[in-house]
Length: 240
Image (cartoon, rainbow, N blue to C red; front, side, top):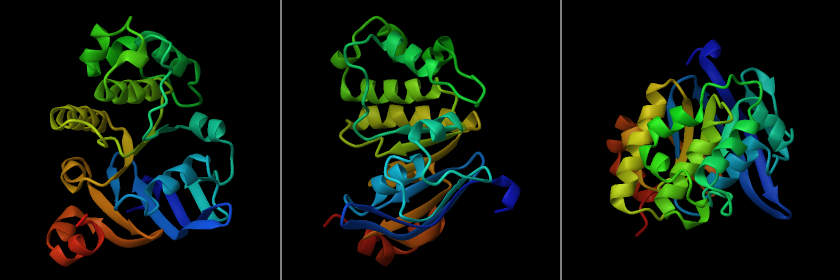
């Protein structure tokens, strides 16, 4: 991984909620145009890593470097305007607004990243949303809300998408459609860091994986290495 291609570097971060320490020296790197997955069971630190990157829960030690700039501790809106989009697990759509209105809210938040996405272009990627353009977002299904959250974030013009547990709670047919959408974004050249519990979902999308357990990185490498190590999968990814 050459330095010019490295867009995100997380260096030895320690993050806590009050007196509860969650991350213990987490480090990871993401290269331009790739999809990297942070794998692990529920409650091991995946979401906290995402929140640390976007500035919602700033690390107490370590650094978050975005395109060569130290953004550790900056306000979330500043990090978002620098080109990082965050899609939380709980989606946080504006339920009383229509689908189209949600998208225009996202467009208003576009920062220094070029506005590469328009409402029409987003509707081309998510045709289902086009049919729901005038519907209140709060009435959408879980899968439709997930698509809307991704679409609204695209309207801000991000260069890196942080996707926190995108397949959580969705029906298999919806998960497949969501994976197709994410692959389309990857083909567009968008850089993606996602957190997941589902190895099958992550394997379809990601170039490389990190496994996190109890707030520490336990594995980093290509999926071929992970697939070849049954004991590693059993130890850190099995829910049984």
